[in-house]
Structure formats: structure tokens, C-alpha cells
Image (cartoon, rainbow, N blue to C red; front, side, top):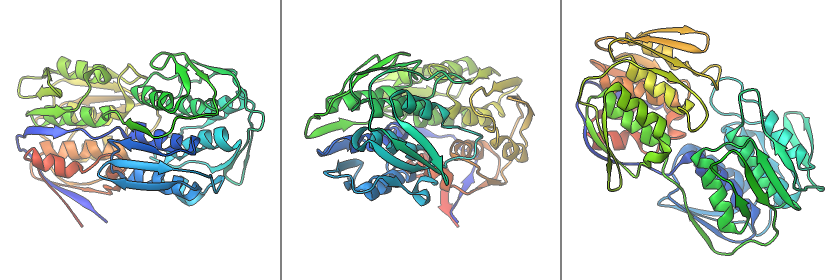
Length: 420
């Protein structure tokens, strides 16, 4: 099984190109099932999750060609209405084909999703949204079965115990795109990835408005544009990760293609810590060579601080003098990287949904085990800053969402290699 070998303590420099957003690409690939016309997607990251989604839509009947980050999808006919367990269990985002199949075929059977082990992520809001649109849902033998022969636009309430849901918002948008009449989703998630999916639906010919706000309106249609070409937005989490690389290694890095308005909360925290960040012609310049100070982070839905960045910041804050805190309000088990960081000498105490971090002078390299996608990137960041050699096992988690991560790091001067 592959692992990373990292020699820490090196200052980095140079430029890094941010890939396309995985969390946009996955639902947009599923959304391509809505039409029998050819769709071409550009800036698609070549990561494991994307390959899994390609395998799934191919299983359903799509003809797919993926070369050099350009993906063409053509589904003249949906050949299967079942998304099988052996594919879906590898990736939670597989559930997006449910919304697409409900819209196009009015029937679907999708296995309950898998993904990272970061706590319960129920699909209650997805089911609530589909039901509001007139879909009959049943769950049998681990499969979600949908009968949407009476699919119709409605007002859809997606308020959950922890707010709205990105996945449910997107899935309802997909289903509503071919429902009869108008659908109003409120409260809707406002993340840039939701906006990206909405803009793709508009490129197809769907009448949609309000994306980026907490109320999205979709008017269903049956006729889609042909020859759609669409470019995926840059990945704000990858951009934030590399900005944090600059911080933890005390380096100056140009993060090209980073969209700063998608990263406001992350950049604000880095500036608060003491980094100097400037806009560049095509991205941002992150200078982490100055003095820094502790801070407190509250994880919240967009435009709040993203849950997908808290692990990386935990690694960073472990190296900053003083006491910092991170309060995780979205997922219950997303501090799994803390135990591994403590094996490196980090001083972290977990108190319910809050991590208390007291910065240490130096982390020490050791053997580490990744538990999920973002935790794995946090352990790599810690290894880059640590004294000695760090070995990170189970890096298949990282390969789910970062394209050529170690290659990009080596181009910046990091000593990191992949081996067994």
C-alpha cells in the first residue's frame, strides 16, 4: 500500500497551479446524465473520486472520454437505473446520480453512500427534498428507491438540525431541472460549488436563479442545449491547503488560479495569524515568513470557515506559540487527525466539539496513519514542518481529492516521495 516519505524542515518557494474543484466536478458529471446530448467539461481534476464517478455514469449508460483534464460525456440512453453498492460505497458523492436519474427517468435505485469516516452524514434532507417534489421514496436492503412519475415543482424546505446541506441543495436542483413547474429551494446552500452546478445547469438551458444566496429558484424544462462546453471552477480547498503549506513551512508561495473571493474566511484567518497575502494576476501570493500568533476558529457553512480546512489548520496551529481553539459545528468525528498529530508532539486536547491547541516549538517526524481525505493532507503538512522523517500511510484517502499533490509539493522544493 502506497505511503508518503517526507523529510521536513525545508523552506519552499515558487508557484503552484490549483486544479479544478472536485466538489463541483462530481455533481456536474452526474448532472450530465440529464441530457441525451454531448457535454464537454474542462478543468476536471484527475483524482480518484472523479474516476469513481466516471465509472458510475459509464455503468448507467454514458459514453465517456477523459484526457488531460477534459471530460466528454454523452448519454443518448440511460441503460441502467441502479447505482450498485460496489461503486457507490467508495464515494459519498455518488448520491448525485439519484437527483439526475429522478429528473430524466423518473425512477432510480441507488445504494446508500460511503465516503470518509468523519461521522454521521444522513441523507434525510435529500429524501425530504425529493419527497417535496412528489417523489415516492423507499429504502430496502441498503438501497434508496425512487418513483418520481409525479415529479412537480414545489417550495422545498431544506432546513436541517445543522442548517442546510450542500449535497441536498444540489440534488434537489438536479431533480427540479426536469420537474413540471417552478421549484423554490430555501434555505439553500450558498457554497461556490453550488453556484458552479447552477451555472452548468443554466448552460444546459435550465432556467435557474438565486445561486449564491439562500433561496434558489429552478424552472423545469425538457429541452436542453446541444454541444455544451463548461469549465469547472478552481478548487478552493486545494488553494487553501497550499496557502496553509506556505504558513506551516514559513515560505512564500504563489498559489495560481486561486479565487480569493471563494476563500475569504480562510485568508482572513491566515492574515490574523500573521501571514501577508496579496492578490496576483492569476491567483494569490502567500508569504508565511513573518511572526505569527494563535487564533480561534469556528467552523460554519459558507461563507464561514470550511470544515474541509480545519484539519490543515490544526496542523498549522500546533506549530504556533500560544493557545488556539477550533470548534467543529458540522461533523462529529472530524478531529481524527488530532491523535496522529499528538504522536508528532503536538499538544491538543479534545473537549467535545472543540479542540484546544497549545503550540509547540517543533513537531517530530514519525509513522502516521491517515483516516480521511483532509486529515491526510493535514498530516502531510505537519510532516513538511517536522524535524526528521515522517511516513504517512493510507494516502489513498488523499488521492481521492488532491491531484498530483506530492508532485506539486516537490516543484515547490519539498522533500516528499511516494513509495511502499
